[in-house]
Each structure stands twice: as C-alpha cells, then as structure tokens.
Image (cartoon, rainbow, N blue to C red; front, side, top):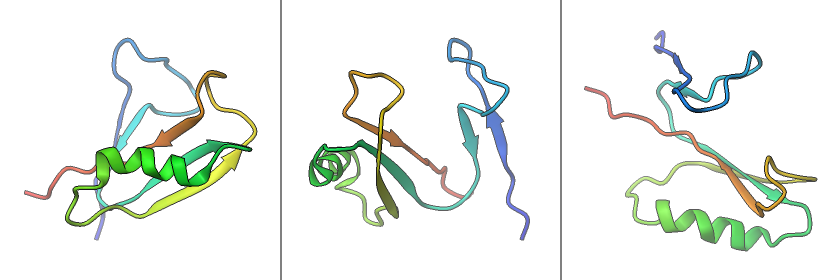
Length: 86
C-alpha cells in the first residue's frame, strides 16, 4: 500500500535545502537525542510528560550525541506525530 507523504516547511522556521522541518506520513515512532554524559533515564522521563497517557505509546529510540542544535539544550526530541486515519 502506497502511503502519502507530505513535506512541510512552515513560515518562520529555518529553511534548509538538506531537510524538511515536518514530514507527514502514517506509522508510529519517535527518537530522543541526549547529550553524552547526561542521564538517559531523565531523558525518557521528560518525554513521558507528553506521551505517558497514551493508550498506545510510540516506539522510542534514545541515543547519545556529542552536542545538540543549541548548546543550552540537554535533551532534543525528534518527534514523529501522526494524524488518525479517516
């Protein structure tokens, strides 16, 4: 089955020739980037504030990186959000 994919770059966000700010499709998952040396458990706890009440929580991938987009950040979440099928 061919899944529709839409690339969205809202006004006011950085426009890059290398990536889209938002891509919509169908599925369920989300990645968490954590600065090397920070507590992985705390990173997952932070995401549970927003996802803990879901009946079917998404798959989560967590991994350590040397740095994030902003040096003041300790955790960066690459979220994948999906709209319900009609």
